[in-house]
Length: 538
Picture (cartoon, rainbow, N blue to C red):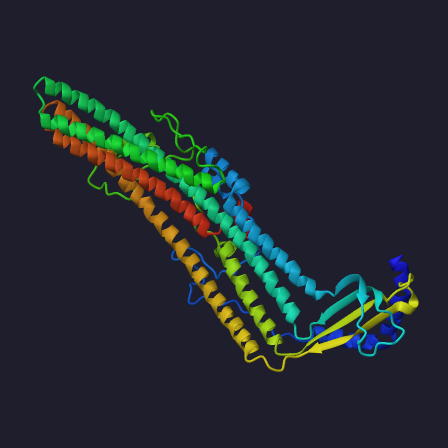
């Protein structure tokens, strides 16, 4: 009924626009796209950075590309337990849910801003019971004291964006939404990396516990031996006390490792959205070490970083063979190979760089918004409807009304408000540019740090492996000499302590290499596929 009643009224309005307003609207439409005060955006310069290499690898200037999922990069570690944790993170992590909510807010704000590019249309209706004053100015003598008022109206308003204010707002909101999307990817990559690092710290803890458990078994055998010798009058009470002290200290360290393992489990539980009370992660190795801790390639000792010039080839081969068997027994492994010599464009995939660049672009657009405020704002409004103060047929032709026309507004005095807003916008752009440069320089540092550490670890792992192996040999020799009565038990304890410390240092280095590998993956922006490496599309 409303549509059929409004049809003749709308027809009259359109006829007026056809006859009087199209020329003016056409001119306005041309002006809409003719002016914008937003400065031309330029990506902030980072500084003097090598254009063609890392310190030892190819490199080129980074320019953030479109956001894309970095894939399941943790699969290269071939660890089923880690895979399950990462999938649980994506499904239930509260931290990831927070980042996703921030992205949803930014997307909704973009839609809100884009709504200003189109006219708004409002429908209103009111029905009131009124009493007018006897002393109302210009009141007629035949007007009643009490009357009803009926009003139904459709109103529209549209801002004519002569100075690009709305366009700059939309562009700024779009850049902010893209930055929020990049933030989501950054948070996702950060949480994935944190899960993997805590997981490998926990597994390193398991290795430490295994080594300590095996040492405790040896200490218990040694204590039983010395106790028997003491009771037979062969060993002294000092030797017995030293053996007891060493055994008790090792058991205390097991308790410390158990505490630390529980804390790692609790941290993983929070990350994946599970309760610390119920979450447990089964140890991946048995007490006898029959089940390997990691399924990827065991560490192989190489003689490249050591000087064997004074030894015969046969002795070198014997030592390498024995040492490699020793390392396999300790479950020392090689982390997956990270292609650090990738093309420099791989760094463009870092989501935090993309976010920083888009925030700089958003700040640049807000300068256009601030400058547009110095000029008049123009809009065009239209309304059509019916109004009556009584009678049953209030939605009829005699009760109709309509209006259409432009409006302008210009502030003559704001006491420096707009100039201050422009200064704020310019300072915000400078801040965003500095933050972008800091993010890029930090990215360079993180990649170089991880690459340097992994490079040095290649040499250190061989030296620590040899140190642990020889310390273990020295412990065996000292124990044998003590049984023969050639040395006192202090020499045995010293050798046992040195061997245990060397083995635990080797395990700590093994864990550090895994964590650094994850740092490098994170610094490079996440995982990649063979196709990406081959085609060069990121």
